[in-house]
Image (cartoon, rainbow, N blue to C red):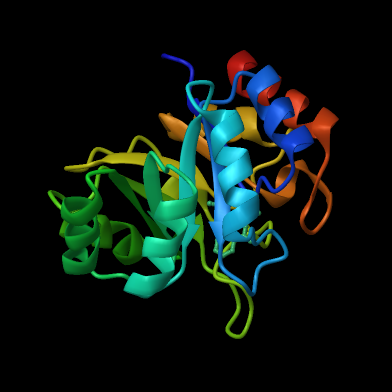
Length: 213
Ligand SMILES: O=C(O)c1ccccc1N[C@@H]1O[C@H](COP(=O)(O)O)[C@@H](O)[C@H]1O
């Protein structure tokens, strides 16, 4: 089985970005969601994106963002992909993909087999679906360190590429990769010492665990 690709999300400092690059992660996630402790301003994003250029993929995370917010993020950070982490429809995802010509990832929150089956509706509209855990009402829609029953997506064979997120840590990611066969893993709070504070050693340990799986 090929090694799963790695995305480290919620990067907001150059130190964390360099740690992700040193760990040979494939993608760095920049959160454009003001309610998140990992939110970056357009100015921060511009600096990080510049530093990341040609060294790691740049994924912008949005939650039901309007056109103006997305245009501002795109103007500041040259993004390689959008990660849509709200209730964006397949039509909205396809519209953004056509408008900006970048890859679009759609996060889907999973608690049942029916939730995972919703991925099929995004075939043709997105480049990847990211299965994540459901979070409690009134909290952030991701980045909470919550996982779901991985058996629901183990060996998933759908009409679109996929990845796994939600509560992945250096301690459990190898098991998650082995059990699901996921081609991509995404973590945020699992490589932090506190919400929004990336732990550089944990980024390294996480990547090693993925490659050792
Ligand atoms: O990281 C955030 O702050 C965030 C905010 C809003 C939506 C999604 C967010 N993060 C994404 O959530 C999943 C799971 O994160 P975790 O590893 O459980 O902390 C992941 O895709 C993050 O990119």
